[in-house]
Image (cartoon, rainbow, N blue to C red):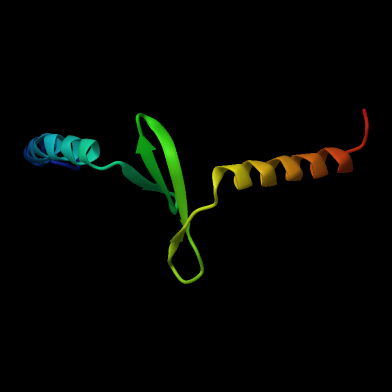
Length: 85
């Protein structure tokens, strides 16, 4: 950090510290977060819905039962294709 002056570090720290309350309030106010192109909706501390974007840019979701069914089918196909031990 020798190339950055102490005054710059101090000003950056003060600006950063001033933004923390705003970021905290925004986080508590919003019940959704977009992470890696997927929007997660939080209810009572748990993920209640996940939405992705389709080719047109519209948000969509797959019902949980359908998602679990597809995952189980894929797992069964994988297990049937793998050689026995």
